Length: 265
Image (cartoon, rainbow, N blue to C red; front, side):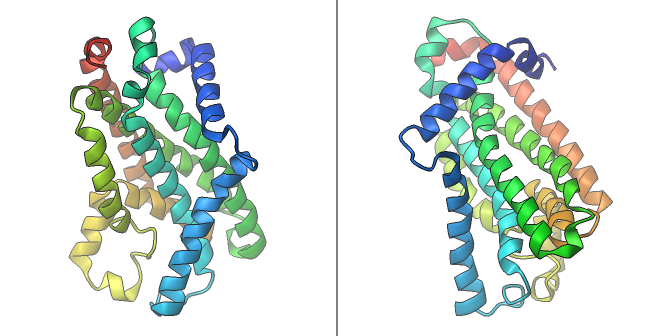
């Protein structure tokens, strides 16, 4: 697709946008990218307290629940922050878009790339931590890398589509912010779908698993990175299809509104 091909053709411009966004994100920060780890670790501590101490859930009291949480949180935090930050990226760069003619899809995609730095740091940390604490994953954890690439593709496509629509309909960014919270609880970040207390609700589990494109992605990521298993073929196929659909949707929406962006912002 030419929409994503422009990332290569205009790589110098994309690199400049990326560096600007990274510098803006970490400007004035003493720890810089290290703050990336603060959010998932803090959330992990809170959920660990709730589900393992205050509320003794079966899955919360299983071994290495903290690592279970971190795998899901790393993917979720990248996805949610990328989509939410990119939602109004076109509006935030209105002055640049009005003054210069350039591939405008680079703007939301550079936002995703900025959050990809954080995701990469979290993933590298998880690979090292799980390698040390979970011997069972040492033969499989490298599979988390291509699976994580699928998560990036889904986030990129949706971010581009949402950022493009937000130029025409300013309610989109508020709708996205409102939907992310319920989507979090409908994504198996805090709980395994295979838990006996959860799996007995078969129809609900099926809806959560197949109706939410992030569910198979996190299931596929957690299999090699936490359980030491190969990801289910159905989850991998779903992830590949969801990635292609998300990228195609982003390209389709952007091309439909591209001519109106400079006028509407």
